[in-house]
Image 1: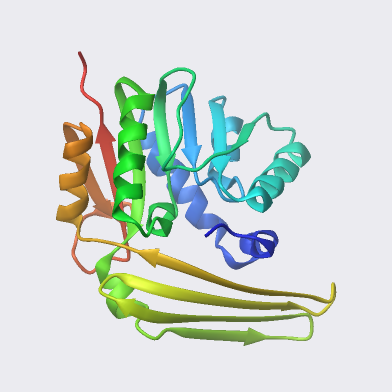
Image 2 (image 1 turned 120 degrees about the vertical axis):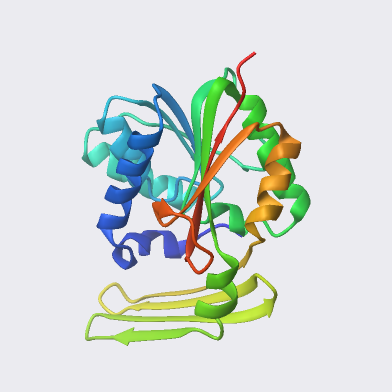
Length: 238
């Protein structure tokens, strides 16, 4: 499911430092000139990379997310190539140095076949020696941290409520309610996410053709009780 009206409120709920840290992580681990981002969201990472002189193709399945990204890029005088893309069914006109799929976007693919197709298309869209960075919400986060999670905030201008229902091992249902009391607008959206073990993702990546895969916990060395697992995958040289 793609983000709809919620896209216009997404940034207000996120910490900008997270994107700064992610940008530094990417720059530290990758040498690239051209990058394709799948599930770019509101463009925070794409814009940072474009400001650094990279050629950036920013894609998302949500037209609303792409519109937010477009408006932000224009206001910052940043050149981005934007396109609506389904990450499980895409091709590129030419191979690129780096492909990104960040902020647990992969977890929105509920069907295992869609995950496998995404990895396949990514592998075949990379140059030899190219890299793929993606992250997932860990099983620990899905099953423990988000177990019947509920958050609610309200003031004179804004009301926000987020509840999580555990449907199965690593499978959750998010319900987001936002009331903008100034603009008289209400957001009421449901989203579903599914995650798997690190070993399962490593198996699928190997099946897709990736020869070298490193993984980290929240930008640091891996440990089982982390919230986010970041994978850095490299396509072999011929």
